[in-house]
Structure formats: structure tokens, C-alpha cells
Amino acid sequence: MTLHLIGIGLADEKDITVRGLEIIRSCDKIYLEHYTSLLQCTTEELEQFYGKPVKIANRTDIENNMQHILDEAKKQEIAVLIIGDPLAATTHVNYLIEAKKQHIKMNIIHNASILTAVGEVGLELYKYGKVTSIPFAESETPYNVLAENQKQHLHTLMLLDLNPKENNFLTIKEAIEKLEKIESAKKGNFLAADLIAVARLGSTDSIIKAGTIETLKTIDIGMPPYCIIIPGKMHFVEKEAVELWKQK
Amino acid sequence: MTLHLIGIGLADEKDITVRGLEIIRSCDKIYLEHYTSLLQCTTEELEQFYGKPVKIANRTDIENNMQHILDEAKKQEIAVLIIGDPLAATTHVNYLIEAKKQHIKMNIIHNASILTAVGEVGLELYKYGKVTSIPFAESETPYNVLAENQKQHLHTLMLLDLNPKENNFLTIKEAIEKLEKIESAKKGNFLAADLIAVARLGSTDSIIKAGTIETLKTIDIGMPPYCIIIPGKMHFVEKEAVELWKQK
Image (cartoon, rainbow over all chains, first blue to last red; front, top):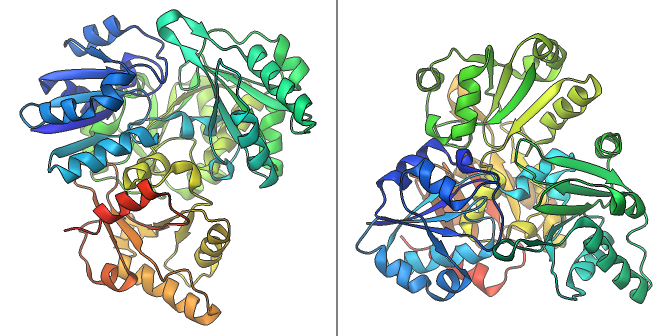
């Protein structure tokens, strides 16, 4: 019996790999972790495509009831579906550690992650510093991460908060205003140059736009999920790529 | 008409996404870039699975004859298959820039990359510094990258050189000996602690082993491709993960 951690990619039901799909179809029970990201399709569309029922796992299930899922995997074939790549975020490394400790067979199916898909923007992946999120709530954390990355000349990827259940998504404009407010309070200077705003990266209708904070606050880039990228020190090829995103 | 850059993942023909497979099957011409990495299957197995002929593109085709491929994409549906994710490496960002300049429609299908699959090792992805390769030839570059990353407390991912055409693969032992030789010449001290050796990451029979350089020189981790990871400063959860790879 095996616990399968399966990445389902970034956009919709067809982003699963052929191998991942075969495994899902052979599993006894399928969980979908659905609180950290957003697909461009519904759970019903996933179920229809897989031909299997999919149980939504909320934050409590995954983080606190991990042992319950591990126990099930001792007796059945269990799939835990994760949007993006299953091990790009640290949360799921705990599965790996616990499964190994408890001698539960584990199978990992990798997939596209926002951390590599952001390569599309044209900034070198290894020059990104720590990734951060901009939450709905007031928080200085994203700005502090940005400041730390900037000091090391690194690019910063910021994921904008979302609450798919309540159809609530932090917009690019709201996120920039939050950053500006903290920058102003801290008398910082990290938002002066061009920023990059991204929507639905990894889907066929993704949009990438570059511009000043004033420009980006006014643009419409359609439906979520959203990211903001703040470049650190750029090589000339990176600058050339950013210039392209300034055009209409 | 469109140029499709399609990531085919890390191991074999079934690592393509369902969307990627559909596109390949609808394309007029399919190129496979085959010199930067290695699959666990043959080109014939890809062709059989896709139901389409696949033309191997060598380094000259892709880097120097990019314009030829771009021109074809003005008149036909062209797929360029790339092992891993299509935009994790900078080479392919040039496609993006040129296609945009020349108003050629571009479609990107992301997939798993070694850069995120290495998350399986349990070290935080954002704490990796610059990625480097250890070539067959004498080169101080990988050691210099390691030194730079270590000074910033960052982890280092080293990809071991390969020449699939001639069935030649730098082994873990050979790579470590190269690093030791440079360390000794430079009187450095970056190879003292535990290292991690990885084979076939992203495939179902991948192996991860941690240990001292002396231990890793003696282990057998099967077929390539190989990577070495040299941890920077580790958080306790990262240390716990590394400990797991020391066990048999």
C-alpha cells in the first residue's frame, strides 16, 4: 500500500501527467489539498476527468490529520493531490519524513510549480531569494522579505493571498498599496523601479505585465491567482525580458 | 500558427501532461532537445507513445538555428520538447524574447523541473543558491559557485555532466574527486560536512543518499542522471530530513 503525493500542476484538469492520472485512477481514495492555491477549473471537473470522487482536504486535515491519512495509506492506495509540485513547499516534506519513519511506501509525482513557471518572466530562477505571500491581514513580513532579498540583489516572488472558498482574492492594486504603506512607514526605497504583475501563470491565458507601481495599480490582468515580482539586480538579458512585458 | 515549448518532465514518456500530449499529437513537427539532460526512456518509446515522429535537435539546432525553428512556426504548428520544465533554464527564455519580437504566437506547457523536484531532498528550495554543473573537463567553476553559495549560507545543487550519445556519465565518485582536488589546491573547507547524492530524481526509482564524501564515494546508486547537493546552513527540519537519507 502506498501514499501517493501527486502534483496536479497549475491550471486545470489536463495539467496532470499521464503517469499521475493512471495512479489516481487506480487509487482507493483521493484527497485534494485546496487551500494554498487555485486552479482554473472546479473540483467537479477534476472528478469528471479522473472518473473518481475527490475529497477536499482542508488545512486541518492535511496539517493536523496527517497521521490519519498516513494510517489509511498502510491499508489502501491513497492519493493526496497538491496544486503545483507536491514538494516545492515545506509542508509536504513532513509527509515524506513521517512516511519514512513509519515505513509507509511513498510515491511522488512531480509537476510544474509556480517556483519554476515564473521562469517565463525571464528573470534567472537561481537569483530569486525567499518567496513570500502578501496576506489579506496587515503584515510587515512580505516587505521585510523584500528588503532582505534586495540587500542581496535577489529577485522577490510574492504570492497574493486568496480565499477560494469565499471567492476572495487580494488584487494587484490592493497588494501594491499594502507594500507602499509599509514602505512609507519604514521610509524604505524598494518600490521605485519596475515591478512585474502576473496572473494565472501556467495557464494558457496567463498575463505578464511590467511597469511602475502607478502603472500596475491601474491595469486589468483578469482573473486570479496573482503574483508580484520585484526584480533585484538584473543582467542585460533579464532587463530585455522585462522591457517586453511593458508593451501592450 | 504557434511555437509550443513543452516540458516533458524528468523520467519517461508518461511524465508529459495530458495537455502537453494533446498538443504534441496535433503538431506538424516535433523537435526534442536532448543534450542537456537524460530521460529514463528512449526516443523510440516517446515516438511510440506520442504516435508521432520526433526529430532530435542537437545543440546547434536549438541555439544557432533557433531562427529556423521560429520561421517554421510562422507557417506550421511546431513543438519543441524540453526535458524538465521548458523555462527553468535561461537558454529557452531567448525563444520567448525572439518569438515576442517577431510576433510569433508562443504556447508554454510547464512541467516538473530538477529545480523543484530537488525539494524531495527536504532542503528549502528558496535557500538554494546558484545551480552549477560538474563537467567532464577540468573546471574550477563548480567549486567557485559552491564557495560563493556557502559564504551566503545557501545550499548548492550540482548537476553531473553527461553525454547520452556516447553513453558517458560522470559518476558521483568522479565528481567528488574533482571537487576534492580543487578544494585541496585552494585550501578550502566546504566539503567537510555531509553531502547528498541523488540519482534519477523525478523517476519512480530515484535514490537519495546522504553521508560524508568518503561514504558517498563508495556507494552504488544505480543509473544516471546524478546530482550532488551540498547543504548550506540548515534549519532543524532540514537536518532531520538529511539524517533520513543516511539510513540504509
